[in-house]
Image 1 (cartoon, one colour):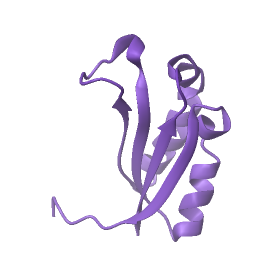
Image 2: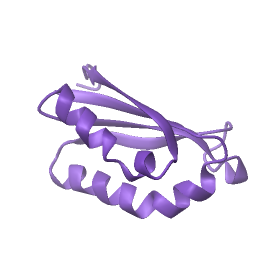
Image 3: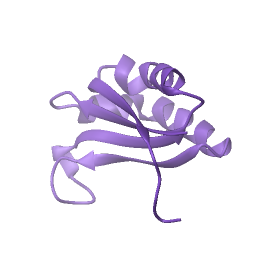
Length: 100
């Protein structure tokens, strides 16, 4: 089943994001290699693809896990959460309907 993982950034997280980004992306690449990643990306803090110094307000990851506990454990081990980029993370089951 898919799970939506929503990370909510702390204030002024941009510099900290840049520090922890390589480790964060490595985990996402592993999910992609395993064929379990549906999508992933950040929420720009302003209405722009490149928000510059405004940074980001959080991230969305939708990936396949065996169950909610496994998805939560994966989210809890995210370098962005451990490193203080995320203030908190929400994990919920997600049902993909479209595109089919």
